[in-house]
Image 1: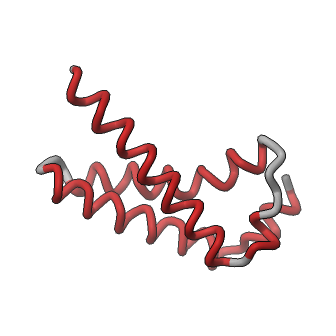
Image 2: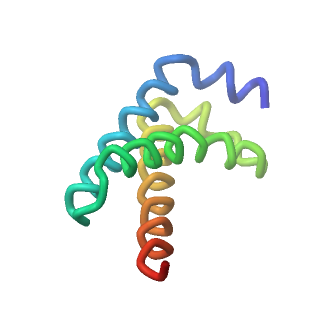
Image 3: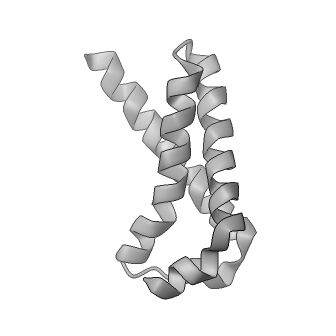
Amino acid sequence: MEAVLEGFGIAALATLALVGLAVGLLMGKLTGRSPRLYGAIGAVAAVATPFMLALLGITVLAAGGLLLVAAVGLVGAVVTLGVVRALSRRG
């Protein structure tokens, strides 16, 4: 896990947060929900996704470069926001 943290660095964490924030803001505007709330959820999800994958043993992300890490964060944010949207519809 430490190797993954060292491999990411501050630039990757900032990139993940910005990607998640952008996805969240966009989805918040498209769905008519709170863009700030969706932006915050997206940022947290994008940052958390690579770490969850590392806990599952998928550590190739650190060697894949910043673009791969950002793509994984993007997918994680979209999936998480989709789940949040689906759960908020039911409630």
